[in-house]
Image 1 (cartoon, helix red, strand yellow):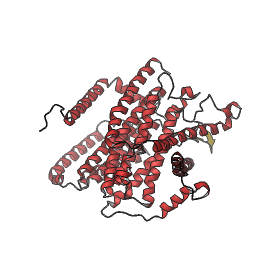
Image 2 (cartoon, chains in turn green, brown):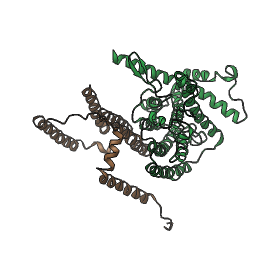
Image 3 (cartoon, helix red, strand yellow):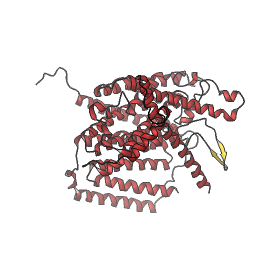
Image 4 (tube, helix red, strand yellow):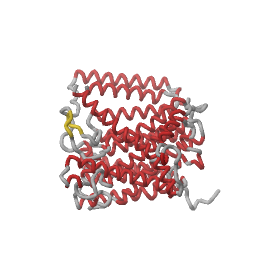
Length: 355
Length: 169
């Protein structure tokens, strides 16, 4: 009975988070086209619904009813497996993201944390572990399609993801040194009490360099412009998902957007104080409405995440694609030394000025 | 409960390890290796070594195996037949190893009781404990390991680099 109830609550939490993520993906597909349109002095999609707001639903229906084609000579098993291998790791990382304040509520005599599915003590490592599994979907999808464009896209992606994952991992070490924990909830709690406590500018050693390395590397890891070489349309048609259609294509598409949301959530939680407001406490809390303070926290978290998502669109509208050798040189010869130097300096600062 | 999980993980690890060497398609082998890494990580979690579990996936599944796949795809080997004529040797070695394991198992049954499973560590977390042990008790082995890795790295650079002053032939 106890276990059944706990399972039901967990499943409800998972369903809620998945729902929010899928809804955000839907909003993002429209937002990206609209924002790109405005930046390029166009209107963006205008046909479906008032002002084009129903476009994601039309896109979803189209993908759902499209014929599912498996190319001749493709490895059928791997071809089917690859989109799932891409999507599942992208969604599973949200299990440790704290969307709101770390409070517990009593429900049916159980302690439940409403804003995080599972606060495990290795939270950030868990996200890194599953982010690295996402590469398999891309590589195997490219390999199994039996097409040279797909294979080249998959190979490029393998090299790129490994190179930039290293930088992501090293960039967050500084934050872990300062907060003394791997749990995202504890890291966020360590940044409470105003924007001057956020790790991006916090004393004793501001993580501004780590922040820049993290943001650039996470753009590369999610295969977005200007690092979208695995799917560079002018060279590789569509890269690793050239041969995919219908729902399998949609899986890759959703995985890319879910990964964008995930890295934005991690960036917000690690560097910009997560759910903490930029001033001490919350306005609703100061007004005596402590029970409603969580609304303000959640809104701040969403605002930070959407700031990063806007940054993704902004980069796409602004920057041209890198050449492949430039991408590799930049990753290994510029980002890696900066991240390593940041670890050394942060460790020295954390030793002499413990928080 | 712990036993059920242990036997599940152990069975899958054994089965997928066999598949890694038995399957003809190297990409399938890599995939069963991936499944094995995940179950080894699961085994670490049942032993309350969460940090090791995460590092197992990050390092082995996330980096090393991706490189394996990379090489397999670059060489575009459809299926490799060269190494499948070693059945007699492999069988002999397998039987010997199996005998040793069974002998050890019988001895441990009659001898001292097996050490109890690790209890969850109270106080400082698993990650802190590993860091503490690595940088105090095992500092020397740790430094030696990093030196070996450094040597390997320098070796790779020397193998790959071109001599600028070398005359063009």
